[in-house]
Structure formats: structure tokens, C-alpha cells
Image (cartoon, rainbow, N blue to C red; front, side):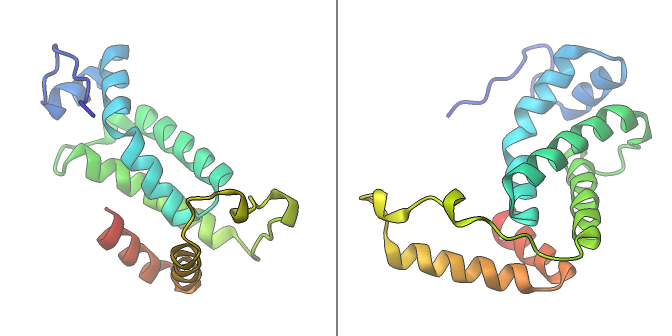
Length: 148
């Protein structure tokens, strides 16, 4: 899949950041287009629940736009952005006093998918449970190392 790049910015991240600081909607769109998929995937792996991930994803972008003047440029923009998301994920983990249980009728029936490999699905579920049971700091290391 070819990434769409606004010709005014090229691949220069600093020009995009400066454009965002100046309130240029094209710069904001370009940054969003570049980072929305990896950022959403990261957040989803950290929080493990779609609606919570959507909330954290949206809050991350709101904070980026509101605090872009605080970005000093001593690291990559993407590092700063992922740190914002990570901090929000940590806040979610700290505030969660108990686990949520999913109602059985909301779980998709795997037997309906003819291409599903049951052994791989079970293994993935076991791995997810193991990673989810780790302390927050260890979970962060696993997610960052193997997924990002």
C-alpha cells in the first residue's frame, strides 16, 4: 500500500510539525494519515478493548494538537506522540479497579469462520491472557518490543 504524501511537506516531519504549530489543516491531516494506523494498533495492544482504544486514540490526537507548542524537537515527533499515548494507556490501567467481562452474546462465534485455525486462535488467546496478566511496565516492554 502506497502512502499518500502531501507534496508540500515531502517526508520532512519537522515541516509537518511546524505546519501543525501554525494551524495548517493539511499538516494535521498529513500527520494523522502517517501515524493513525500504527498509533491505533499500539493503543489497541496496550488496552485490549476496542472502545477504550478508540477513546485513547482520540484523546491522544487532541493532546497532540493542544500541546504541539510543547514539543521541543529533541526527539522524533512519533516518539513524542507514542509517549502521550503510552501515558494515557497507563492512566487507564491505573484507574481500572477490576476487569470487565464481555457478555457471551457479544463474542463472535469462531465456528462460523471456515478459514479460522482453531489452534492458532487458542494460542493467540492464551498469549494475550499471559501478556494482559503482566504488570503494566512488563506489558509495555512486550508490546513495544514485539509489536512496535
